[in-house]
Every structure is written in C-alpha cells, then in structure tokens.
Length: 489
Image (cartoon, rainbow, N blue to C red; front, side, top):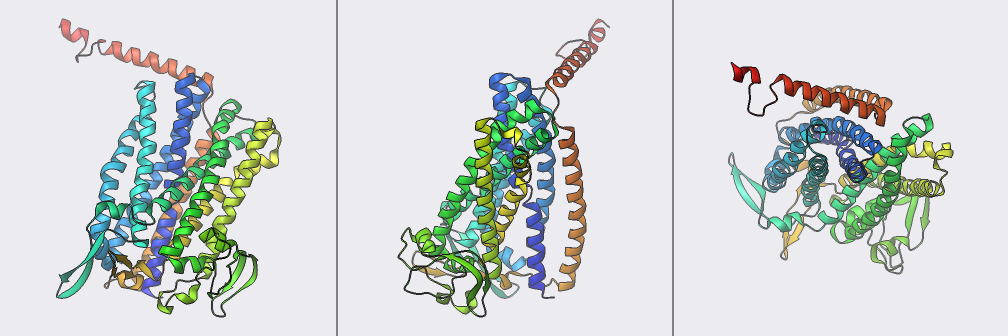
C-alpha cells in the first residue's frame, strides 16, 4: 500500500481517537462550573454532590485526552518531516502558546479542582473550576488557529533554506496576529468550541436522563437537567449558525471544498440548489438518488437565491479534492445537528411542561444524543480535512503576491517505508483499543456509582473534619512545626 495513504490513515486514526476527549472535556468543564456556581450561590448539598460527581468524570476524560494527544506530536516528526520543516516556524509559535498558557493553566488548577474540595475555600475552588474550563477552551484556540492557518494561510512569507545541499522552502511568520486571525480561524474556532459545548451539555443530560429512567439520584439529576437541557438547545442552534458562517467563507477561501461538499460539478448561469442527500458519482459528474432543494445553496452562500455558485469545473483537475467522502460526512454532520436541535427542543418543552420524566421514549432519545454529538464532531473534522486535499497547506495570496502552498504528497518523510507505517498502525490500533476499553470501564463505574447523596456527603465531610482535627491535635495543633511535646522537651 502507498506510504502516503498509510501515513494519512495513521494520522487520521490517532487524531480522530484523540478528538473524542478534548470536546467532552471542554463541554463538561462548563457544565461542572455551572453546577458549582449554583452550589456556591445556594449552598444546596445536591448541587455540591453534582459538582463533585462531574469532577470525577472530568478527571477521567482529561487524563485520556492528555495521553492520546502526545502521540500526534511525534507523528509530525516521524511521518511528516518535510511538512514539519515547512510549517515549523508557524506551528512552533501557536503550539508554544498553547503549552505555556493554556496547558499549564488547566493542569495547574486541575489539582485544586480534583483534590481541593475539602482543602480550599468555596470561592477558591469555584475559581479553580473556572480556570480549568477556560484553560481547556484556550488549548483549543491555539490548535484550531494552527489548523486554520493550513486552510487559509496569512501573516507569513516563504524563505528558502539549504538542507543537505538542497534548497527547501520554509514558511516564516511575518505578522503573528495576522497568522492568528487568518481568514477562517474565528469562524472555525467558534464552531469547534460550540460543538464541544453541545457534547458536554448532552453528555450531562444523557447521564441524568439515565438516572431518571432507573429511578436513582433524582434530586441531583433534575438539578443538572435544569442546566443541561436549555444549554444543549442553545448551543445546537448556535452550532448551526456558526457552521453557516463558516460555509459562507468557503466560496471565497476554499471554493473547491464548497463544490465537493455539495457535489456541485458544473457551473451554470442558473441559481444553485442544495442536496439533502445523495450518492455523488464524480466520474459521470452526477448525483444518484439525490434530493435537491432549488436555489437553497445560492441563498445560503450569497444570501441571494438568484446568484449561481461556482462548480468544480472552475478548479484545475490536479487541485480537486475527493467528492464522495466530504459530501457524505458534511451531510451526516448537518443531519446529526438537525436531530439534536429537534431532540433538545422537545426535551426543553417537555421539561417546561413538567412531563419530562414521564416520557420514557424522550429520556432514551436524550440518553443516546452524545453519540450524535460525537458523530457530528468527527464528521465535521473529516469534511474539513479531506475537503482541502490535495493541499496540506493551501496556497494563498499575500499583499497581492501569490504564495506557494504544500501538497500532501510533498510533506512526507523520505526515509519512512510503507511497512513501518503499517506496523505502527497495527500497534496503535491495539493500544488505543485497550485505552478505549479502560476509558469505557472506568467511566461506566463512575456513572453506575453516581453522585453521593446529600446525606452521604454530609457524613463524609463530618468524618473528614474529625480526622483533620485529630491529625492537627496529633501534631501539636501548632502552625510552626513540631508538637507541643517536642516544645516541652
């Protein structure tokens, strides 16, 4: 098998597995903060039990995100050496900022969040929870900025370097903020973060709906649902709005991707329709079994139902992306998003009417919604990455000058063989399968155990206070080291 295909499959597999965890950490972080904020304001022990429970779940997921994210850094050097040389100056700036500011922020306060419940004051613990959430979101900022720069590069120039007697191009940053706020970064970042918040809201709603179905932890579940359901509806609507903004930018920045995700083969002088579903046939330039809404693509892209949208025929043949996969994953993402809006809307209406706990079919629908959110996140990533092929870094125009990009085939490491990549794919598959099994096992244990009851929490805090007092007396009750017996001696 071709080394390029294998290297792309390896990176796709590792990043898709990793991408299960950061969105959940970000979304769960907000839900955790809102639960703890409610406890801080009301001092209701049910809110405290909820916050402590979601802290335990968050810690498990955060650990998985860190463990699976390390691998990709090494993949850049082993499989994509030419690409690393080309983008090293750009990625170095963004990833250094992510490591110094975001990761240290969230990992530093994570210790207080997890272990500080009975060791720091409520205000400090609430602040730590907020910092962990913001740190998680801030990590996403720099990762998405780096990825967006590949799609719509800005703020750089090309410098040629001598590498073992051969001239090699290298993108070097000339304007850091132009690189950060490249043409697609803000839209892509807001869409990505909101997608993470959707997942977190539905995850909390799913677990709490499961508790209602089983008749367990009713007080905690209902309080968490009062936050999770309305935020799920809000964020799913916002995800659709931000996705629409991103799609409108494609006609200017990546027209080939737009043509691919809508299987728009030929440019005409007529308004362009939008396919709800279908089976694209690139060889014959047609869509089988397709259902199309006339003029809708023109309306969505230009806010004008009469203006035609450029098709794939405007793109040089050697710069055209695959069509079938981006088309299907894009429509899968939109379908999952629509489903989540419908379910969240029905759940919120039922909650408002006071009948949510009585509709078992609706409870089960909410229970499975995290799978829809994860599917939408993964499908969106596939659409973005496959839709930009054959470019790993898009060519761009800087100050009226056309700047070179980099094709995916040119970013490979010359010394890596197909056998080496295939063996690493098999090894990663085994390790990641074990990690996934461990994650599911531990997560299931946490969920099956559930939050402590307010009574159990009160008893635990009383015992902890008694043990702390005993330990303080055993050490002489002083704050200066040594015991009273030592001082008398």
